[in-house]
Length: 139
Image (cartoon, rainbow, N blue to C red; front, side):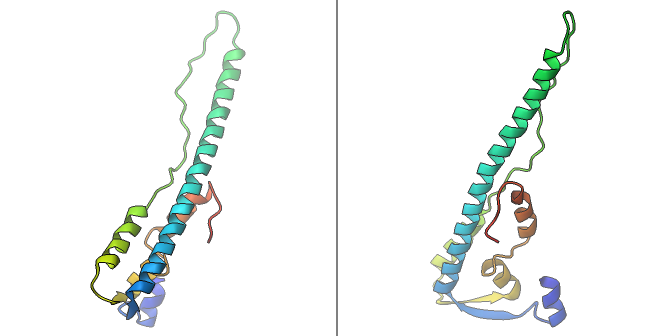
């Protein structure tokens, strides 16, 4: 999106928004993020337990095939899963800033608008891809 704005000459564009409307959007974005994060945590737990069960089953099978006098080295179990990340504190910070602002109107740059209003922050696509393996998101 930033590249598109740059080509259009809008990267430095500013917009004045009503603080109360901005706060409503920020709270909605935060709620969606928390909901998606919690769903990803549930999905992560299910996937992790399933993978652990599979690993234990394979180890149990290997040990059960041993003949008298044979041994097998049982290695530690490791599953490779990306842990869902929570950015709730970042939402809380900007919400609190807007709550404490004495201004009734807030000036946002194009990039701030994309981040705060459109919920299109740096790393959002990577975050969404990382939780997609555990849950279907709203978007």
